[in-house]
Length: 433
Image (tube, rainbow, N blue to C red; front, side, top):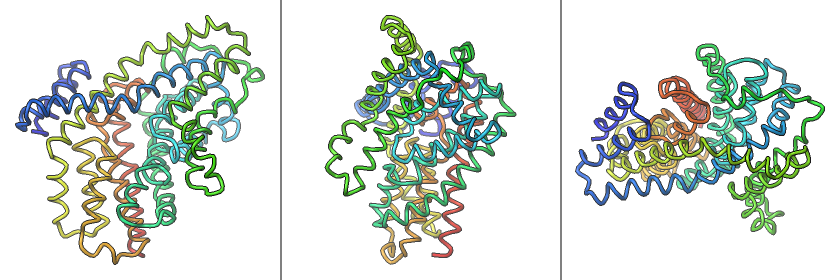
């Protein structure tokens, strides 16, 4: 049922050019019907997919679009571009983006980090007259690595908790795996994609006039949402700051941080640079026009994920692979990868793989270093092969402005490189555990 449904989805999009949202819904419902799911369960999967996906990104996309629009008209995005290029130079800017994404994604959710930082990639692409992919891919790779491999991001923390491994070992192994994965999937793969696919910057960025660098706004204004979100994570792990944890737990909630940043940008970047409130209202309202499509397509990707998850496909795959005679690190990667490919959710893949591995006999006798490598292997498997059933696939496609084929050839391969490279490094380290 899953295979037939995914084939229907692919044929509708690639062959018949059916609108992605409609094709995803048809494919998802087809899976439920062919699998013999009760009609009520199919409806529940659709509702849960839409609701649970939108509640995580709706405000982020809307607030991020308005925040980004103010950055654009005020020159804030150029501040980021100029700062990065000045410090690293044009030739090394892609490396700087990968490192920036990796560091930012540790405490910040992938969606929030992407929405906040994507104007930087566009500004650099415009400045250097290169394909957006030359800079977007390293940024995406850094965000993917930081989000998957290195605590305090929730995924590896969840796996480490289930496997009862100290976070210090997970961080050490995660950094080793993440750095290699970021290099291979970021600057290296981004350079190849940038030369092969000329993806222009979005029209509103391409038509934007260059701004005198001497008149650019303060760089720190742009970092408001990132600082607030990072402080939330820091207060949660540093005992000396525990008294501030409740405050930053609220202020560091991604949508709260973006709301504060948007309001601050209205005054610091907008009004102080000569814009009236009426002009800002028009700029912010216009920025919301493309968000409807982004949200609906992304939400339908969530529907496909829940349909596959509720049909029980993940459990079937996990049970079959866990019975194979393979090293635990390999089992962890394979289970997570198969669930990720079939269900689409990295969180579900991590949870299922960690649960299966934790139940294996003899797991408690393994060294902490080996368990940390197993955690990284789970993270690698849960990252590979982002495709039509992953809401991140549709978010990246819409934000970067690519068609489905190009997204598969660039973003999907990038995610696979991140996961496989991280796994290989973890496997090598596990041999010395």
